[in-house]
Length: 65
Image (cartoon, rainbow, N blue to C red):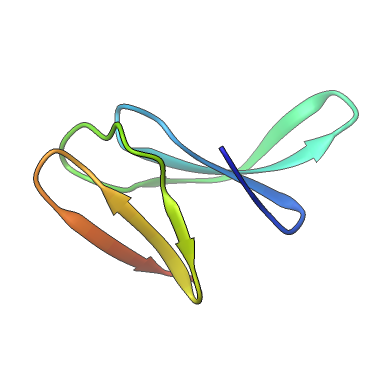
């Protein structure tokens, strides 16, 4: 899990990139993205303008909207 301002970014092993917001009852998912076509085990890396995702076969830069 990574803290990005008021959001928490996490990457599941089934390649779901989840953006959540903290609340009094815990993390509340705001958006979920399919980040890769194969399993992901590495932590996502936040960079200016996006996030880098490593799956079993590729390294991909996803840009923020």
